[in-house]
Length: 293
Image (cartoon, rainbow, N blue to C red; front, top):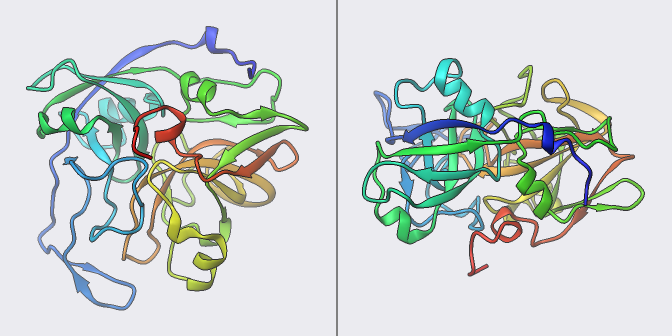
């Protein structure tokens, strides 16, 4: 088992409510071909979309799996909603504390930047009882997590429980299971941020040759992916010889610069972090969230 400083971490409560889907003055999105389209977007309870499902094959744009939450008084990157988005970590336990589904538990699966929301997976039966405005409490645990034997590897947005279940092997460094490797050249929206403690950045899917070469059309929500030649130590940058591991947290987009979003989990040198492609490397499998995949 990887040695960590888990005994030094603080577990703290953060809370959000199920966010209602929203629309601007115009319902249209403009595709990269210049066509206006109207599609289902993000937020709410997506009854038929969960981690383990395709991140590509939906008539939707930026669809978020299962349940999307924000702080009830705001939807910004500062204040209480900022605290929710920074402190919640992938793999944290979430519990419904109001509404017909009160008492049901779920698992944090990602964070959506710009929208400043946190995604939580629940069973289909639990989601049938939920509605926008229901409150969800998260036991936030993971900020400050370190691998004590690998000081050059940085962790973000990762709960100790996720790390324990990920099946990372220590063999000439860290053998990290990922569903896909992704070249940094196709990363879009989210570049240039000064930190990765919240939010995500997008895999653009508009170059057919690259999509085919790397099998990106097979991406699933909840897949662990390795962004090659990317360093997330102090923001998201291109850097040869580095690798950043993340999790796919929302679906594809028709808008330029956008695509399946990735929340950062780990970054370091390719001499230490060595991605191993494994088609089962998805949070739904790793944490036993579904029995049907």
